Length: 253
Image 1 (cartoon, rainbow, N blue to C red):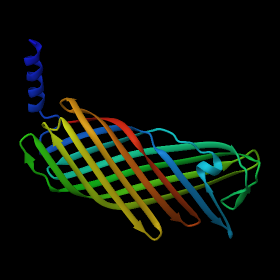
Image 2 (image 1 turned 45 degrees about the vertical axis):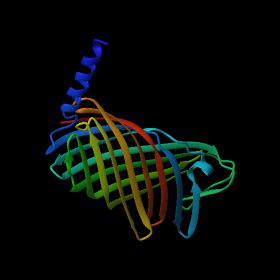
Image 3 (image 1 turned 135 degrees about the vertical axis):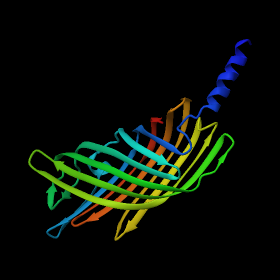
Image 4 (image 1 turned 60 degrees about the vertical axis):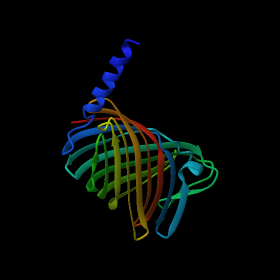
């Protein structure tokens, strides 16, 4: 019982000291480890020959886990963020039907090795439309302008042939970001949703996470992220969806 007042004093001290930087300025970085579930389909049309396959069902591509990172700067109501997410999936399967990819056919019975690589780089600007501070709590709601550069590659290979196809596209996106912090940001909830659709292409992304700061300037996080992508470029149509939880940590000043 004698320790209880000391415990309360520590709690009040943590609430009094900001868990993040001052209201007008913040700079930092966050790292995440993502556990996404993959849905992927690829269609190619080369020389009048069309082929389409499902990466999981037809070629045995499995789920994987990946790191991701983001650096950020906030000055008043203005946020700048840059991020990078590399993902890579592989599968090996003796196909039960003919698979046509990039104009070439992998015949039924062949042992096909599949690689699907995707690198995504982000540049993001957010302006908070509202950002009130009420006692030890705060809230923000802002408009987001974002560009995501997608660099992907699909490769199928067997003992007798190898076919590879890549796709690249910068995709501008619009969206909203919102957050709420309590006890001087010792506990926070944040969410961002962005997207764009044009000419048969689309890209939608959502990220929601909770943060807890056991000590000033450092927080641990848990969240859920989804990316839904369709790129129709020349002779390839790639449709991918990645969704799943992640854990992370953030350091900010």
